[in-house]
Amino acid sequence: MTAPIYERVALIGLGLIASSMGHAMKKWGLATTVTGHAKTELTRTSALELGFCDEVFASAAEAVRDADLVVLAVPVGAMEGVATEIGPHLKPGATVTDVGSVKQAVIEAVAPNIPEGVHFIPGHPLAGTEHSGPRSGFATLFRNRFCLLIPNGAAPEAIARLRDYWEGMGANVEEMDAAHHDIVLAVTSHTPHLIAYTMVGVADHLRRVTESEIIKYSAAGFRDFTRIAASDPTMWRDVFLTNKEATLDILGRFTEELFALQRAIRMGDGDELFDYFTRTRAIRRSIIEAGQDTAAPDFGRAKVDGA
Amino acid sequence: MTAPIYERVALIGLGLIASSMGHAMKKWGLATTVTGHAKTELTRTSALELGFCDEVFASAAEAVRDADLVVLAVPVGAMEGVATEIGPHLKPGATVTDVGSVKQAVIEAVAPNIPEGVHFIPGHPLAGTEHSGPRSGFATLFRNRFCLLIPNGAAPEAIARLRDYWEGMGANVEEMDAAHHDIVLAVTSHTPHLIAYTMVGVADHLRRVTESEIIKYSAAGFRDFTRIAASDPTMWRDVFLTNKEATLDILGRFTEELFALQRAIRMGDGDELFDYFTRTRAIRRSIIEAGQDTAAPDFGRAKVDGA
Image 1 (spheres, chains in turn green, purple):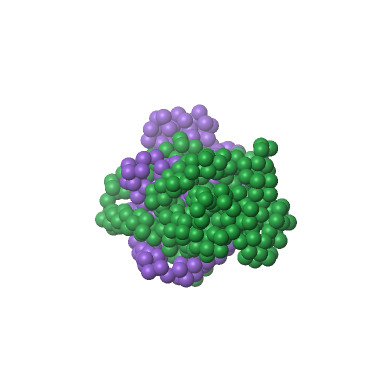
Image 2 (image 1 turned 90 degrees about the vertical axis):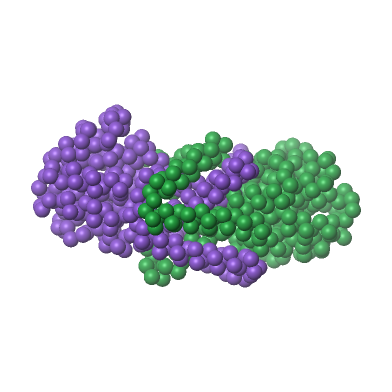
């Protein structure tokens, strides 16, 4: 246990990310009091039962009262409504941050509602699972994951404090500007998710033809796509609607590359395919070297020679 | 240890699949003698050192002499050359099978070279990792994986024996006709792999712009693609060249779906996106219910609340 970094932290939205933050704050003593707000009573009750909130409130305005840190953990499309509601109730000197997957749109939605004297520092922890809701959170979700903070002109001491807070939950904190964040995430996260959703959708249509075979033989590669295509639909709808430009840009590049490979298949150009597949293999190696994955063979099974 | 199912088994090609079969035969006593052939001496020496072959030969023709079962475990594009070479040396009454990811093309390449009195039963174990070579194999690779056999008009007792052999390695054996196999695999494996390769290729081009950021922030979804895009380039080149029609068919459907989603993003049609993402989530549930994956949250980390 370290000294609390914030006295009172308000979690607005109590899903996977907020509940994990709550558990992490409790585990490592990062806050004295954790308050929470969620729209449904069932979620609020769960938060108290699970113990990651000390107090819950039916309105966001009540939840943020006297908070030193306010964390907006709602889908990106709901940020503006929440910001409008809490703006007049924020304590002078408090910090407001968020955990949205898109940053330019969040700044446009939230910044105009933050009063003078309150620090607004957008953030994005690159962590998650395909599960959602208050029961899916766990304290170690952020450990060794990156958390990107957008300085956005905030006071350096407020940024340093928020950095300490995330580091207290085990995250590696980096600063980045909002536009750059949105294009980096379009490549590393948003477009891959859209593609996974699409591939699973294709199989869904065919499934009616080949019955349960798609499901049965999914381990041959398809299964890896279904995992990311099982993520929260509301969250992802909002990501694509609010990071439209960057996602469409990367999708355009993806389509070009796909057509080139499709042409190589149609023309029987084995050399082009071989060269392409060799280059992509090198990227995998770089990711392993960077410590962002292990070289352990997976494909759904560990390399264990058990009985 | 059970009684050996075949006296003498010849592995032609000594990569991930063959080396795993060799280890499995040794572990469960499925063959009295395992012979092997690979083009390079280094691979042959490794097979002896690792102990999954009893004898190795510089030519495939020597390796298959007196074999009761011959397993063709070379890339699909190399099947015809191998079949031509071994045809005259096969023992009457022997069974020839293969482990290629495409079945119609393998039958066209191999069947004409199999003499009267030898059983040819094409096969495809749906198992693998992103690693390749003789050192990547392990005995339990096939456990609880499906192995598809193509009866192809072979004698029922020969099929039953090959089925026992695969079941001895822990696989669930199913029979399927070749054309149907190729379309099922185009959906569950071949197209997902091509798409993963493409997404990683897109990032490769951008990487030069954003330096190592793609690598660094890959855990947000992209990483799952790089794993399957790290598979053996030769094997995958041959898959796409030989399962051209089915792959292009599924790719066409994929592109249609992708364009529909891209349009929904551009038009800001949140309802369409939400409905699509909700449907794909249901498929994920079916896969978990079918026992082909677990519901444990992954995204590169287990749900363990360790210290």
